[in-house]
Length: 158
Image (tube, rainbow, N blue to C red):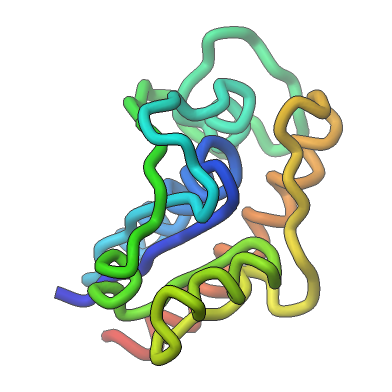
């Protein structure tokens, strides 16, 4: 089965959020791709950032108000961080990274990997532990980039 692996650094904010959004976008388009996430420097076994998941509408331990909140549904999710492996990279049809240094790390694991940035115009910065505003800005960048990627993948894998 064809799959997309979404990576960031710790696999607790950006990559799980982007993977959740991408999986939903691909499902809505009828695109049969599996979406997974991992981190290039991840310490395995950590939960996803509750603020990041709240911003993608998957978990809401607290109330967060942000533009577009009415567009996402709220449901719980269990996420456990994991470190990306060479096998993960080899098995993925496409690897999506948040920052150029992560593209480089993935390429070091497998020089033949199909890997690219999620946002082709810019790195998506790590908002972890910086606060709500940073998360909200990153979430909007992720959401926009995921929609563009989902359109590309839907056209390629129909």
